[in-house]
Length: 249
Ligand code: ADP
Ligand code: MG
Image (cartoon, rainbow, N blue to C red):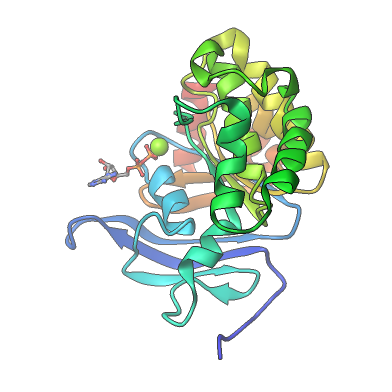
């Protein structure tokens, strides 16, 4: 029997991770994310933000701690990790769409290959998600004909097509030309409004202020400080938070 303890959509408890077995990159990070909550993670480069997200998606193993998704412990060896991974959508800085497939095929591939949906259903669902990201008119083109911002919106639709329980975003707008950033953030904001649980690593402080329920300041492999956008941006408590915000705001 897999032990279950619900309440949070995602719960990270005292996570430790090193790549080389010696130097810990994540040094006991904890985070609770309630259903439909949006948590933005900010913090300096190299502080472990990407590693933290990749552990939640089990793209990386971790040495110690627990990550619960809907109360199910990802560190429990009895848990089917591939099934769990399907429940966690991830969007990266680089969109990694399959270049030889159309936009529509990019989106229907995983749901049909994993046997979640027959082809007809997958196509109908794909159009639904493409409409949501404002890209339905590009369903039949190849990704290379699209701008970076358009490709990123397709990548979001592709992740949504798996009907995830939670969406992780790792600096989704960092590689985009400035004029493309707004459209992608708008899509993410709409997703948040619809009640998607989201963990978003971002440098877009405006987005964090406007959309986040909680902002977590990541520093030195732990979450140093977490609070409402107002608490973190207007009344930071820790020196590290203050000095980081001084540099980026
Ligand atoms: P951030 O996303 O906050 O910039 P990362 O999670 O990418 O931070 O990196 C945290 C630390 O882990 C850095 O010191 C980085 O060099 C190291 N690191 C990241 N990925 C790997 C890897 N695949 N192998 C070894 N070290 C890594
Ligand atoms: Mg990173």
